[in-house]
Amino acid sequence: MESRPPSFQICTLSERLEVADGPDPTIDEEIARVFQTEPADFLSSAVAARKLVGDVWPEARLNVGYDVSGVFPTATVTCGKKRGSSVAPTVSLAILRALMGALK
Image (cartoon, rainbow, N blue to C red; front, side):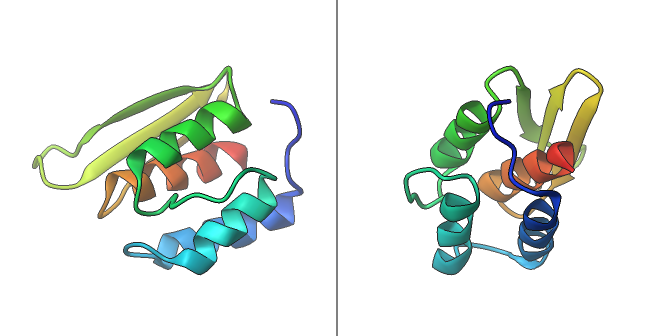
């Protein structure tokens, strides 16, 4: 991983993502600021969330699917011994929460 944001920023962002349940432009702006990337609709775009994982941590592996009931999206980000998993109301939220979990 090139440059990792300070752990307090990851924890703060992670807390905000845990209570999010859909698109939120202020969290999108915070993600762009924390990861020093171009602004995007991270919470409403699975494509933008996937791209963020690749940009932030190119060697990480991302798996996306659905829970056993087939209703809620799941995501897992792994890299070596680091791992983050999430079940969320949207694919993009699952990806972002999993990324934050792996970065903690």
